[in-house]
Figure 1 (cartoon, helix red, strand yellow):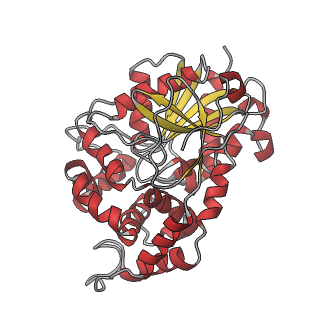
Figure 2 (cartoon, one colour):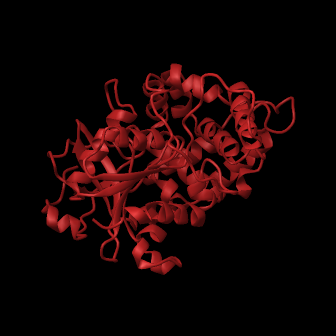
Length: 383
């Protein structure tokens, strides 16, 4: 499928829209260098029918021998999620929501990269690039794009407005899948620097969590042209030797770290060493894909055994379905393989601790997340 028309950069930045409808399996021709091409995704009816057929024909294992989530997602919990996915969930709702944001593709470093670009209606808005991690996509920022770009419509002030760029990390969602090694956080950071310059931003800030925090930190370490400040919602610094005289909150952090290493890091080990192997299973089974990500939603929201109480089923299934329709399970798992070699090179300069919210703060506490970004970047506004 070709592009219907070409627009000048001025027309694109002014908000002109031309839809490029992309079937879920289609590979696109390479974009011309430096072009910004409007993008819109619509899954085919055949792809959604195939998903429903696979859900209906799933073969289930026996019930776990323990209780709770100790052995992974309990059978009853996953059956409930999958049944809702099959009979109650509406992907077209999510698709329509995504279509409401201006989306584009542009070619950087050999890949066609996808991003949302929402210019604020408020003058002097501060540009910000937001980067997700795994198992997230651009959907992670659905609840905060509006409040960040149009604060007066969401209880804020015009002086806190942002021009919002949300980029799909290479191998995720609608961005291209690399066919070579080397697409780690540092390479992605360089691509984001090019993207922000291509959008005409001489000065901007950046935010990221999970692997997005590594990308954002790398942008700062690389002194990306125009980058004024960064915000992270993911702690990256772990000392080689943990001292004995810890404060109570430090002891709690160490306990959480040890719990993760002993009981919660299996997915990390597998995706950082055998992403292709797990990719076969996830690409072939939507139930397997759902279990793989649902388990992370539980651990990322405090291991309560009830992630649905913190993040709606619709939001979790938005993410799971996007992974399924774009067949990015194996490619996104490779982020771990690529990034392990860079582990330990980043430093976290400090943090502000909230009393609520976890790994998926953008979903869990979008109001607090938005206010954190407003507070963090106020001193970096203006020339």
